[in-house]
View 1 (tube, rainbow, N blue to C red):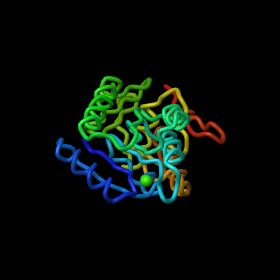
View 2: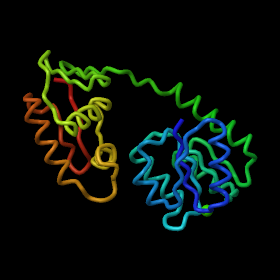
View 3: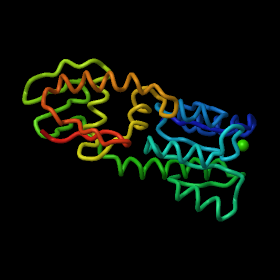
View 4: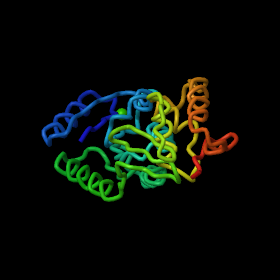
Length: 219
Ligand code: CA
């Protein structure tokens, strides 16, 4: 599993990295909250410290939860009930207080991973009305006609199709396609959206939900 450790203390980060690497996981370590917001896309689980130098970890958690369902385990020295409850309510999958025994940490990581595997049901194909996507071959057909999409248009369509019938926010799209939900690159989103819409031909498939985002409707 690809684990992202967000921890500003070098000694703690080194011990954590060694422990999870020994258990066979790939580890990336970042020490700032802002870096975590920009570099979480490859992570299959995030270990998140709360006392970070730039942004409070709970705020990092809140922002991550706007864009990703990746399992997040808080590992913090804050052991008061209020912090723990806030962390879990904001969407952390587990909350461990420092110091934590490394064996316990690894067992908790495994338990969270097991739960998220059970919850995850993504299949390799998505069908929305007459639209079909083969996520492994990266092809899309509409009424049996193959769509000629650019890479970004395909990613955009796949993201909307995964959440068909529900709104995907602009932040979620920017994060998934550009890895950056919180700095504006939104002009290029509009360009890709226009391109995708013209290739879908069917008007109204991508519904604009004003001020929120977009929703793909079955045609
Ligand atoms: Ca810290």
